[in-house]
Image 1: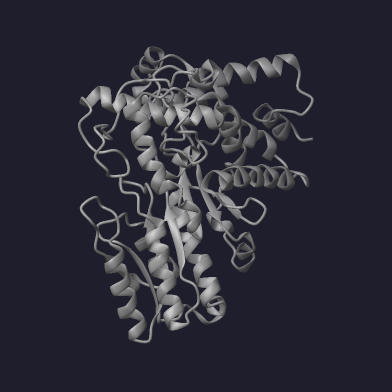
Image 2: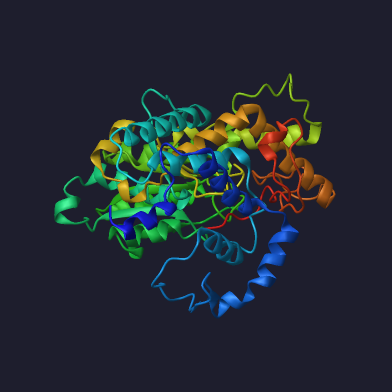
Length: 435
């Protein structure tokens, strides 16, 4: 081994590491979870890095320039902390352990068993959440993605593969149309642009006062498409989508869509439920609201029951997209795409939409469990009522006297294991995730 290569060994953690090497690794990682005060002091001390940094031997280097010689790991960590402005207040230990496990499983070299291990973690996450939304975990499929927005694109890709399998070779047909509520999120607009359908083939459906999609208007616009000889392809229902508190009634939308496809003898229209934050409320689909074993207070229990009246129909969607960065307490890219008929995944390649976050998602799901997430989600409504005096609408858009605006502060759901929320300054439960 040449001396230059030998010098780079300090950048790798060997398989047969010594106790000293292990302590050094833990010491470096420990700096990322320093207190907020220490992080602020680090930021002040390192303001000069905005212009130039000093290496161990006194050389000055522009931070935008690739250095000719590498810096020490201690200097690299210090600069990372400067750019981070301290550690995030929204971290939790299960997700952190899962993220570290992902890096350790990947390693620095190709390992033949690595893919099998990560695939198994993803299969477990998909099976767990399939049960939550009401899918048959033996038939369903899915994949971990970067976000719920990626799941919208994944659903459209699957719909295209079913309606136009030749599109991969001949291009997207020009007679296919998608539907979404007016003034909704732009996830579907991005998807139709990405796939080549184009924004002209996205039809906006009128919304009700509560923000949900108007089934009568959906029916009218789908009939207009079919009567002109074109084909309805894809409907995105909002069931707690990014930037919206509306939860569409999937039973109503499914009846409208199926009636039109039956009337005109069309292929089934793919319905995707964009449940970025709302999907996790599926944990209440199996909750005993009469016995109330977790002893939620009456008004919170009423709000949860109202939300559950909509979320219990999630299984009627052909696919569901979720994002655990919203209410799932994840501090990493944590999207999930669920497909009711998992066989359909074989018709399309979605590798570009996948993310290696299955181990981190699995860690969170195992650590929180059904009861933990039920307590967290109930705490959202409980603290909202305390903060806003019980004025407002619940997350389903029905007036219940329990508010739904964003929380502030650092609350921890009672009853959760202390080690689950071990870091100080916890992020607000409804805080917007970092993209």
